Length: 186
Image (tube, rainbow, N blue to C red; front, side, top):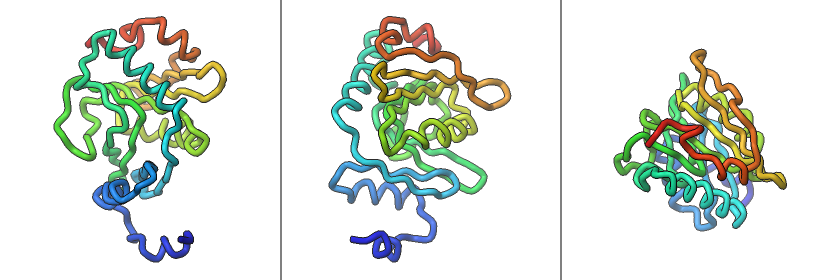
């Protein structure tokens, strides 16, 4: 099906309910996200390297005492902006307490968002989501590059409501530290 044919069937404004329906209908595992301004992103399904990185980080957090109920992979979060609500699906999230069951979670109790970059998401993860997640008040935002070192960049929210790059290190080095060195205690 061509982009033109798909465009004829798309609503003028994509709601979070529309986005959830698109995700549910996709049989290829793609992720659909929208910015608060309504910009639609379609990301291919993660590959095995992506899955291993997410698993290593989740195990690292779990072994350090974070309860499974406060760690989520690919959970939808609601990002509110002046133009409306967007929906993002970070690779890994860490919460201050367990969340209610919902398709799109509020960011109120969200402590950390981790995005593992893919070829199709690098610009969005490095630029757009930095501003969106900071504006949403998420205290920590980390990205994991797909370079040979799997470089992790840690961003911390400052009082001015913007992220400051707090540290940058290879994933293997991060995994030798304690999550408590970077996050509030469990």
